[in-house]
Length: 249
Image (cartoon, rainbow, N blue to C red; front, side):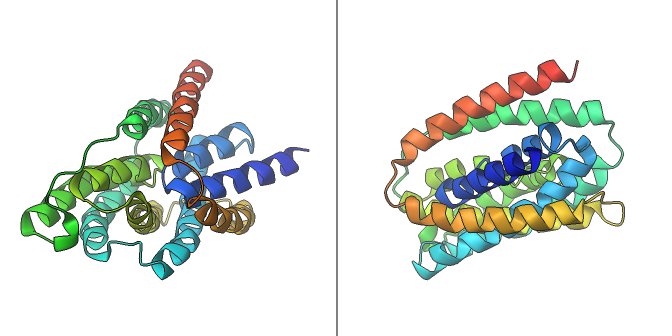
């Protein structure tokens, strides 16, 4: 029964990855901790493998639809990968309680970010202005640090940031977010080695199921109002953060 539940929830998380590219790392860590029963350190390392696979697979249909801002995504990814590598190293020195506190606090921030729908300014990153690229790259460093430290892909912050600095459709922001998340999680995993406590069999199984779900989500993304999904994700994240804080006492 537990295995079936893990598989079903993994498929749902994969669908969410294809729809928004955001929040999947948070949900994956919660799945691994509270359903699979992994300790927080192992759950974070394992989630990095799973989320990297889901995001990379979901990126393919967005790339084929030319809904990826490669220049902005590359600038963000390079700086955030550096932060993710450092964050992965730092996480090995922190106690489990500290990681849980950082994780719960970040989930609250994720909920706020998912509810936030800023109006895009007239200038956009599609024109690759130096100011825009530098701003996005600077934002990637602290975000990458969180990625490596607590197993977050960073999609919850990347999506609103790209919408804020671009005038492109939401689908392009989602596609670019998937690119950043895939690169961030890979860098965070590298930062965890050689001491990464990855449950490889579980990671492989969830990656296959989640990746299949992400392809379904990418197709559904054209039919579902993203505002409804952002509000639902925000509610889930706030509830999960509260449950995590209560259970850690």
